[in-house]
Amino acid sequence: MGNTCYIVAIELSSSKISGVVGIETTEGMRILAAASARVDGFISKGIVRNVDKTSGAINDIINRLETDLNKATGEYINIKKAYITFAGLSVHSIKSQVNRDFGKYTKITQDIINECDRLDTFQTPEGYKRLQVDPQEYRLDGNVDYNPIGAYTQTIECNYLNIVMKEQFYTQLCDSFAQASIEIEDSFCAAHFDADILLSKDQRRNGCALVNIGAETTTISIYNNDKPKMITVLPLGSNNITRDLTAELISLEQAEEIKFIQGYKSTYNSCDGIDNETVNKVIYARMGEILKNVRYQIEESGEMVRHIVFTGGGSKLKNLKELLDEFLPNFSTDIKPEPEFNLISENEVNIYGVITTALYGLLKQGKANCCEIAMPAAQETAIKNGELFFTDETETEKTVETDEPKKTEEVETKATEEEKKPEQQKQPAKPQKPIKDKGNGPKKSWKDSIGNLFQDFVRNMTSDPEDENSNEENNTTINQ
Figure 1 (cartoon, rainbow, N blue to C red):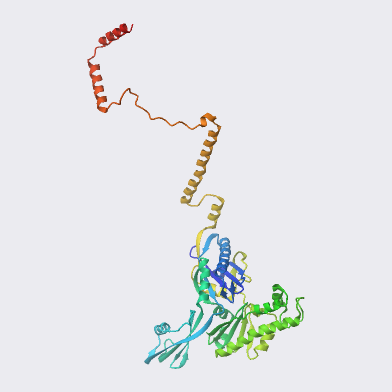
Figure 2: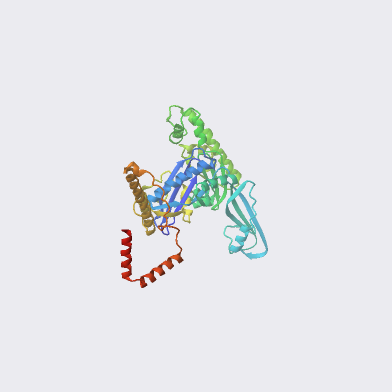
């Protein structure tokens, strides 16, 4: 793997979980693996409702990504970390500010800006967690300055935009990854990536709202002076239309087809189970509800907004532009589908329908390596096939392992030979008795043995062979 930096990005939405693995090259982002799976109610309105099911889905995505990585790299790679986006019903922004009075003209330095950041005493609402802080603008003696370093002033006012989320919802999100044994390297607000990719610099500078209509939520982001000014999430999405259509006794698949193929004020009927008039009433009511809330949030923000850009799955509704003109007459509107990203697909990895603006933003934002190599794929194959290992250590282990079957075969052979012996030979052997001393009488001590040897030596040295012969004759006569 060397110094290759593998970036893993995972996005959880109300409709699906998607993940990609990529590496940055001189030619662009190279995608090595991609996978997605539909969500079946365990994530609702962008919120993890069931940690166990979400963790299982994340595990499934990770396994599929690792399989693709194995094919693309020829190495067995484990995914350990991931970059993720946070979204959901409770995500919204709150403004805060820090004021300092120097008492005399003071040159603003980076240290002063950093000190103001530390002095930010923003009070997170009870039950919420601050996830991100975006510096907005600075006022020097009351005059707006977006880059105050180097300027002289007696007073400075620093404004911030704080992105918060319900702490319990964020805990459930983190627990899902922890249970899947995946560390969260960093998390980012999905709406920022959408704006960076879909809005031009002029749109962000002149005042523009980006509206992402998802399956169960609609996220509104307002930009002005090239800075995010407000983020809020509505509990409304395109599934509201789907549910109302299925209430007319048509299937879920038919309802989805009506939204994206037939749409609003269509001249033909794509489903025999429901008429055009009913379809138009349902779409008008539910999409009108979303657009009215969008207009209200923009007006309440107090920001100067001239243009609204719509994106997300709900923006694919056929003939949506007619509804935009009717409900948002005072704004110029536009519909932007997700763009075609500059991505290089490895080994024909299917990225269609997987890569979103949020995932692309995560890939570009990621800096840390999220994977580690376990073993070369060739070595893993050799292990599975029972072939020799690649190192001396593993070869020794394999030799020891192969000796065991030989010992087992020898034992089995002896057992077979025992079975072939006659029955009398199979009887258990009698226990052997202790071996006794061969001499008659009690056992002699070592002192007695030495004494006898000395006596024999003296007798042999002093005895006459003729005397021995006469003794033998006398013994013979007596025996006779």
